[in-house]
Image (cartoon, rainbow, N blue to C red; front, side):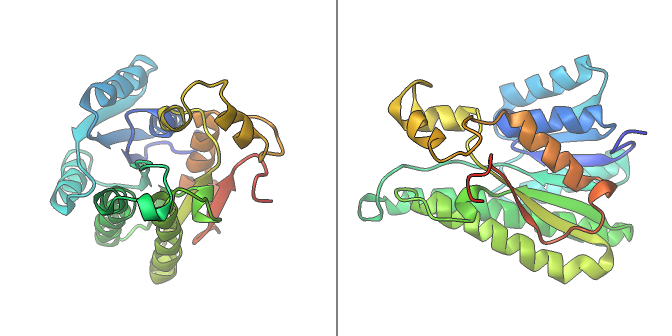
Length: 253
């Protein structure tokens, strides 16, 4: 039997990168996947890829910074599929790579809204629904190694991902006794559109410097994060909650 047979799982930020790879893995493990994102074209492409592979998926346009939109997709999912068993809260943006004295206040607020308030909105709606179902549930959010250590020149991203780790641990403690597990994955350097925007040419000096920090001497593929998230969303990790799990090639070991 597959890890997630007959489970309904909501994936935010599922249009590209880690989100798309995770959605595909969840589907292959037997889950019905609900993709929520603002990148409509890429979101529909993710759905097509899953359906072509024999899975079941659907797409909803959702801005995670808007609580009402998040609540709506949760309600619509339950109306169509009767339940939500799990969620992967992955929507996120990177922000400018500048020191704090040059950091625009509006960019600070924009990154925090998506990366932290967005996860807050999602977890709040998901926990509310899981409590109503009275069958527990699993929530995994994407933090980052930047949520476990410092990164010069990335104030808002670092702060937001530290916030996701703290939020994960808090909600895990609040609802562990109700059968709701809440964990986070903390990716290192992953081959995604976000990394490409940060570094430009894959052969440039920034990438070489990044690889110098990674004991395994390579950049990970999005599917490697997806496999970790799928495991955390499954009953194979049934005694884990409140964990911020690094998937980073040994970087912060």
